[in-house]
Length: 64
Image (cartoon, rainbow, N blue to C red):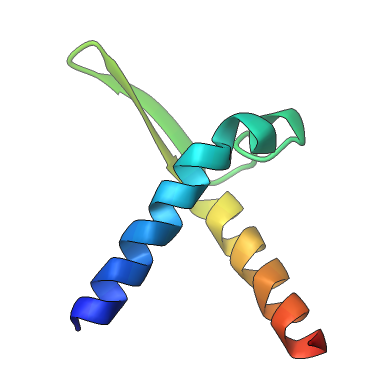
């Protein structure tokens, strides 16, 4: 259980770290990616982007 929490945390950290690069490529503006302001802060939940990137990672892992 701890391993999965760590994997999810690291995946979210990587997505957050690479989000400026991904936004230049068009990710983050897909339908299903939520961006909202709450208490003066902007929050971003990239659901569709996460699904597409996980599918891409799955295809790459099957090829290797």
